Length: 151
Ligand SMILES: Cc1cc2nc3c(=O)[nH]c(=O)nc-3n(C[C@H](O)[C@H](O)[C@H](O)COP(=O)(O)OP(=O)(O)OC[C@H]3O[C@@H](n4cnc5c(N)ncnc54)[C@H](O)[C@@H]3O)c2cc1C
Image (cartoon, rainbow, N blue to C red; front, side, top):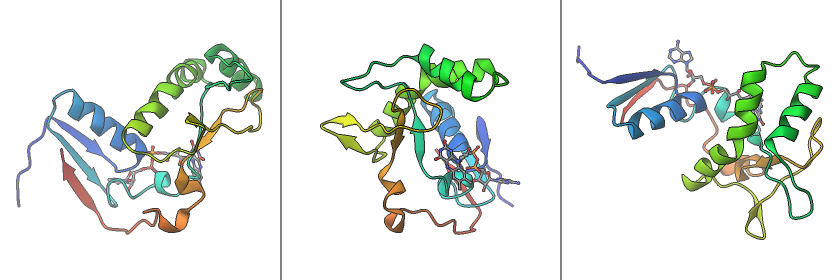
């Protein structure tokens, strides 16, 4: 049996785990990811449709976190967890920018992130990665292999 030491242990290898591991690593912690299946290639994250929403606005239509919150609460019949809705509305654009900076291939048009209409939104807010259109070439098939990564 091998002893492995870390300052932060992340259990799971989906999007939430990978994002937590990046944050821990960037904060200077020795970070260990342990997952039932292959880290980065497992869980619901790898079979999701890869759609994200953010109040990006378009050249023709402005948008704001406040309008995103209002639409989300209305569509959710006001039973939403409001602090989570506000966090999503205010953080979404910056976090999607993080994904783009790390190499996620989001669809763009004329140099801007491409947004499409989606249910419940008064503005076009849905943006997608290339994976959504081209699943054949994406590393999307869970391998079933357990794994660990130290970073
Ligand atoms: C078909 C489908 C389409 C979707 N489309 C979208 C979309 O377009 N947009 C959107 O925002 N959301 C979408 N979702 C929802 C989204 O995929 C999930 O909310 C998100 O992926 C959850 O991420 P997660 O990291 O919390 O969990 P997961 O990605 O499920 O990761 C869980 C991780 O935990 C590991 N694990 C499980 N049990 C153990 C254990 N006992 N020990 C160690 N590791 C373990 C797994 O191997 C996996 O790595 C979709 C979901 C599905 C199923």
